[in-house]
Image 1 (cartoon, rainbow, N blue to C red):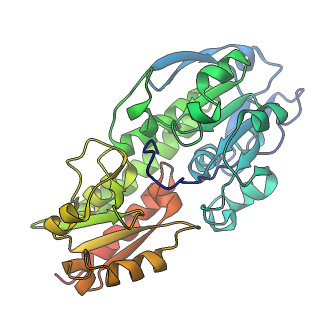
Image 2: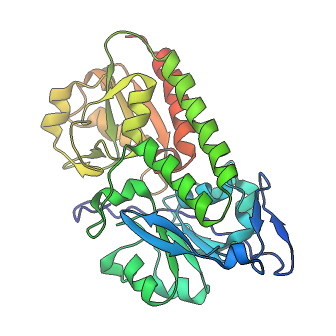
Amino acid sequence: MNLPLRPVRRRTAALGSAFGSALAATVLLGGCGADVASDDGKAAAKKTSVKRCGERVPYTVPKRAVAYEGGSADKLFSLGLADHVYGYVMPPANPPVKESPWASDYAEVKMLSDDLLNKELVVDAKADLVVAGWNSGFKDERGITPEILDKLGIQSFMHTESCFDYPKHPEKVTPFKALYTDLERLGKIFRVEKKADQVVGDLKKRVRTVEKKAPKGDRTPVFLYDSGTDQPFTAGNQVPPDDIIESAGGKNVFSGLDQRWTQVNWESVAKSEPEVIMILDYGDQPAKKKIEFLKKSPHTKELPAVRKNNFFILDYNEGISGPRNIDGLEKFGKYLRGLDR
């Protein structure tokens, strides 16, 4: 997140185990068993050009990737790339990795830190790829950016969703499109394009299924509550909850804000009269306490959603860019379809 007033959001990431034998002709990857060319083959050594936000950069097949946050690790694991992941950085705000659909992959790789990403950690890990978002994992103020890593000879990959406010090479696409783009680009970097196409195709199919079932008529106004008491932080149209709400048949009351995670005021929340409040649930700011606040605060206790007790809890890793966005969509779609308006 790029707002100085916003409480520091600690994100998680997963890092995989050491790369397999250099003599193997092919590597059978964990999870879905994607095939990646061995490091002694010309295909693996050859560089392929892939976009990192709006900048096209050359990549060789990584063997010791480091992932920051669950979204980063999930993307790699969903492509069957656990054998190419050395470790992960998992700040405490994130839910336990044992709750992940790829828990077995997390168990096979190293947890490098439960704090924020930093350059020293990456260097010590001898990482050859770092996967993170701009202004979350990568940040000028903490001295770890793609440009800094480039000078150290360490490859980096940024979530397309976070490229919206990347100062040097911005890129803007809708959040679900950003998710698909990341999987496709990682597929090219690791030479598992067919696997990436399969994963993306399945995610798109699941999205279409929810959209077809969406309630007809006027869309339900939904307010995403991230955090904040004096002023709330919420989701603009450049982060996954906006697409989750839209595809499920709702309307993000702040979808008009061309922002990522952003600060608003309680007056604008009250004016929007949300019928549902989506609570982003993460470790150091659990949903239960947020709901208690909303029920007591004079700014929110009379909102339609609060009076009707219409709260939907979105897991942290369903709200940040990653394959679990679609899990969150399916759950919210079911919730909206059963809502008594």
